[in-house]
Length: 536
Image 1: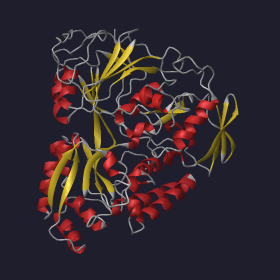
Image 2: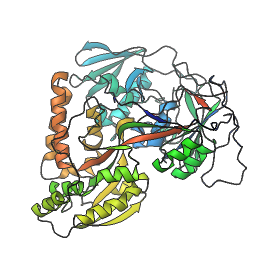
Image 3: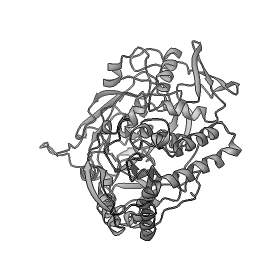
Image 4: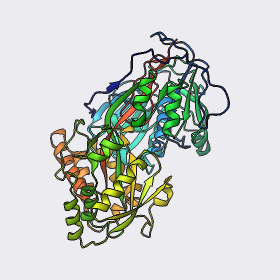
């Protein structure tokens, strides 16, 4: 059962005066500091629509990471998860443009043996990039290690066991009937069971269309890919190579695309969209689940009181944030899911800018002269912080901004109360899938987000346990009852707000249409080059 977003892409292009174009082959990636090597001047040539045999696919990525390990969804890394889409396959994979699944290593749909047992046959001839066959043992191992993983395990908790039926078939037994089996199997990517932990962390191999040549996921680094010579699936590369330039700074990415030293740019800053369009690039916006959110330390007074948490949401003028900082490219929150989502529900509690309501809630909670430190992630959300500070001040709340590169190890589960008060940071688990259970499980399941970070599972009010019960009922329910149970979950989250979005943001992707064919932006973090080719 796919959960599609119903909103189309919006498109913004500048057609007058001739588009910037360049041949893809031989282009050097722009470095973070610019370097001293002269840049190749882009040729003023519209190119052709025909995909080239050869050449290099190039992209400018907005996030950093060194976690190449496909187990556990690369630890949630936006950069390396996107790389994993190109290097590895699951039994089924997810088309990030439509959120529909397709057969990857599987030969067809799961065969139902009973309500709680299924069999999946492997496609013939599947090989890893080193030439070895993909075996049922590899699949079983990949599923088992992901089931045991702290990040991914929550998404696969409905599986009781996996086993080899024969040399072509995997048997999957479930704890209870689960309608989203095929969708969830996409989170587990398959690799040779013989790979050591060190190999998984440094240069793992898969059966996908690409393979790693070198990996430097730090700011200013480059991830280089070459085609997997043994791949025979539907996304066989036509290019000779693919290179991703890691440019955390939005201006650096903008320059790279404007000067056509890359074909595609992730996460176009709203302030630079017109600049890129004027230079001949295409900028497309896609409404999705991407968000900036407040995350509260629910064990630390006064944020252990949901009324205090609510007060911050009423205090912030989100409409103004969207207008001034995002050029209108976001939607205010009316529920946990965006309105375009097939399972959208307007929450019983909807936050609008209401300073008096914020003050009233603080007074009701017995909180006076509230002052706290807001930890702010040093990515795009940092631009939101100054207005948030002023909005809170208008409600009588003093806020000190602490902008930093988040060291998530400091927010692990602890026997003592975590030191922080509130964090402002972005997130978007729709890069894993977008059914409601998966999205709620990511932030509110029995995992690092609730054991550490928000610490909500340790809170004394019992609301986390109440949510878990509702979510489990929804997992086991038939489709006629599932939505009502999810709606109860959404209402509880909107009331308690241990971690809750300020808005749902549109994702902006830029690309040079004259340089690349078959490329389509997605509504979540990451770039997808599957099916794309440099233009001749």
